[in-house]
Image (cartoon, rainbow, N blue to C red; front, side):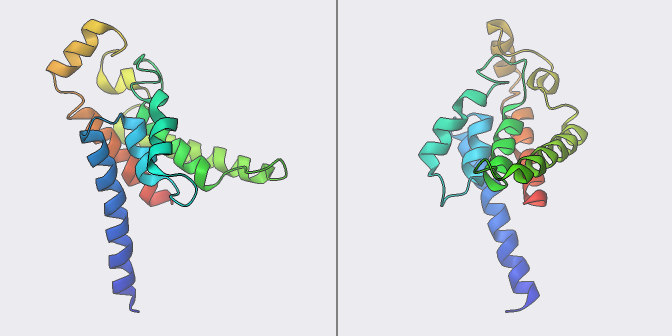
Length: 159
């Protein structure tokens, strides 16, 4: 098989995961669910399980709006799943995973300006009036879509 063909297959696979994340997000999954479910290790966890696990991390963690961006949380869970500390004897994996998490967060912050939901959106969606304002300003359809896409792009670079 030629390199060109291998690259095409890899690119198609990469685009499929990013597209899957954006599709999940557009179908009312939260940012964390979208990223985690699209990039999870399918041989370890099915999509329904991934959606369940990631639910709590959307909307700046539990919908409070002030915490870590859900796209970041979902991506960090992907890195944990990939480079996990699956047992007590795997402490080196833990260190490596933390380092990859820091690298991801640095790259995301560089591209999005922050890793915090409130800073990215410019308001705290945990407050009902701000949640309504975010909807009116279509921040979920613009800024949050960009956050999901950015997380997907960075994961593709790292995995």
